[in-house]
Image (cartoon, rainbow, N blue to C red; front, side, top):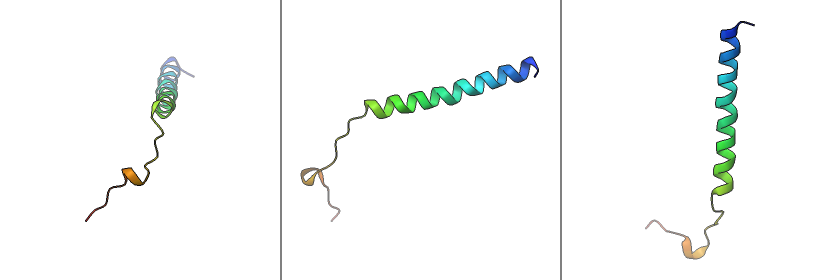
Length: 44
């Protein structure tokens, strides 16, 4: 493999794994509040 191909592979791996890490972090930080009857909104 050429140097250019290796650099592009590393960059793409960082983007993909970084996006996965940020998605996992976002899911773990979000509150898991499930709406109950008091939170339900009706369209009239």
